[in-house]
Image (cartoon, rainbow, N blue to C red; front, side):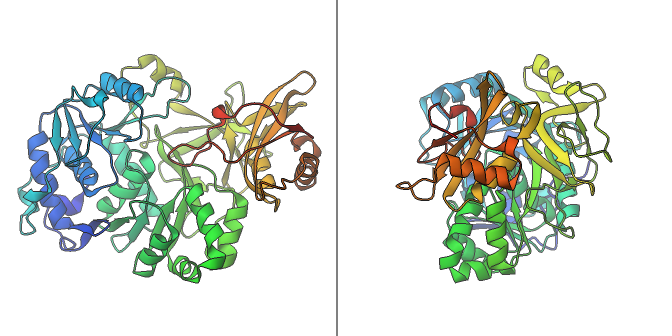
Length: 493
């Protein structure tokens, strides 16, 4: 297998170019090769290593060093609670914990041997070819990334080296991603989005990443205005951008000059798509992936962005929709909601220590059951309508995706945020419930008005029967709405 990081494994034309920037701290490709190579030499034979994944140069160096040493890395969320950290440590059994010097670690990690990532060994004149060579087994575990644990304790998805390479190369094809690109983002480094796509992606392609540390529209405008070409974000970030655009002309100018604006980790509301496009002339493209599958689909850089669509399957990825019986829906048939199943080199190997869960995750033929529900447009574009467990509502004999109702609600001027769920109903089976953060907390739009708005935009059977008003929607670190945290009580429509 080719090395994951060609610019770090041998002399390279881009050695002197900037590879990583976190605030005012930077590393060139040559410097990164030297410091990660020195750490990789210390990690050889260490078994699994945990990484305290703060948004820092040290986190990036730690993960790159582990990958170069052939040692599986387990990124840890610094915001995790004690019980969750204790579970992950017990499950993954790391022999070392790599951390940024000076960071105070929680008690749950007290029994794991700590090794601070030492940046003082950096030597810009070091020869990267003297570092230990990367392992060449494509099936070797590279990362163990723990799922969010919405249906039980987090499970460790074992991601092999070939899955990382396959996804990043497929995205390079879809996005025309090259070493000339400079990526800007402020994503956490313990998830697929910020770590694999947002950090390892630029390094594999010979480009660079500028991490903002903390998201802010000023930082986005500054970096895109200073030569960055790509922006990665989650819907919460793009929503804040859309809100700020009318008052920040420099932000609009910077976004207009970007080569690619990419949103992921959750669906970007159509309303925000349209506001950004109107203000900048640039459309945000979406892609779709999971911890277990990395990236499955994307709108291509040379394709036509479409609000609400996550594009077409990436090179090497097989994708199908299946009905409730697991039977494939015809690709050229009438529009119908089905569960997405995928297979390809981008898939994980297993859930660590969970052969039962691994077996249950796959259908015959090696198809991974994503649990995501979608429809496919006649031109092959995939549109996700929600999660099978929480976003597919069966009401009055209809199968309804929560996502399209949420987009309809967000188009109402009185709605700032919206989520849609289903709850048991003795007549309909399930009734549609809307959770709304009003634009004006003192004068929320009446439930009857919102129901009529959805009925006129979509269809009468898709209108919410109950509306709850909230000050904010519960979200996780990646901006995804945590629907299981939504309670009861509200106004009927």
